[in-house]
Image 1: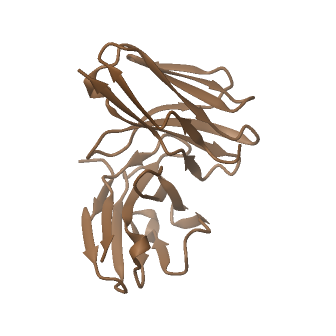
Image 2: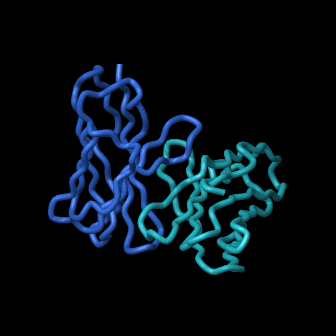
Image 3: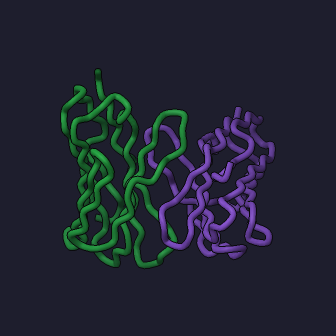
Length: 112
Length: 112
């Protein structure tokens, strides 16, 4: 994998459903993996920065896991709420330590 | 407000004109990034500064694009002889070292 890829592209869920997204990134020369939430008319907001293989982070109902050997990360949202509706972006930083390469994002819509 | 600020929020220009955008990062952040985002795509890396030094520039950036960060404070992004393909959201972000990026609200450029 040369680029950062996210799936699905979009997702519609009902309030209360749990959901998860996938981010695939280059596993060679890996440095860090970031997750951001981008709500309409707002700026992207950092959720997690992960660096270690097997890392697992949690923030309220949102959690993320990281597998650097196979180059993927999962983002989980438990009990989705309408306010969780946003585009979720992941980004990978390689050994250059400078450039953060973003995926196209997953657009989540939570219906009340 | 101690966040990242960008000016202007919106810019409409005619093809062939020059435009300049400004970004004021969080004061203690040493790293500053410019990204461009078009509909359906993730943020696309343009350039990166560490303090006042421009350390990386995307090959996607043509000679018409230039960025500066005098004295390691605010940054400007100039586009000369704008083309319709330059229409996009231009995002600025700053970080302290390799930590999470803090984004501004962006400048939406429309080239007519």
